Image 1: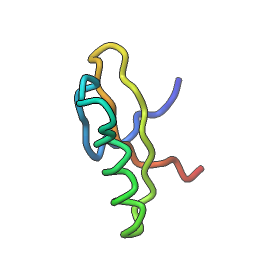
Image 2 (image 1 turned 135 degrees about the vertical axis):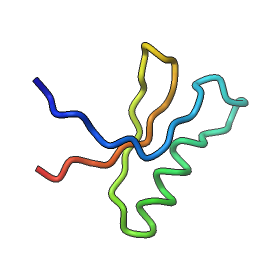
Image 3 (image 1 turned 45 degrees about the horizontal axis):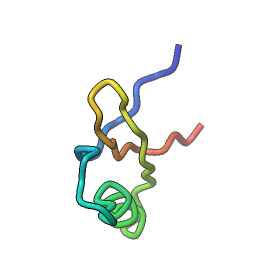
Image 4 (image 1 turned 60 degrees about the horizontal axis):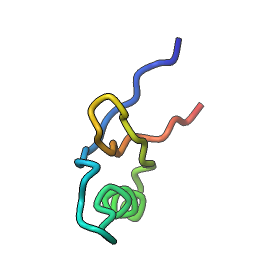
Length: 55
């Protein structure tokens, strides 16, 4: 079983065409030293910005 990840932000999947708010937020967090990545939660149809696993 996988350990839960810390969700740092979440965004609806149906954003405007050409808009990537979850990717932009993850990049913003990485730029200030917080390792972050984006995952899709199919159950809720949302993009999750989560803390990257370090191990």
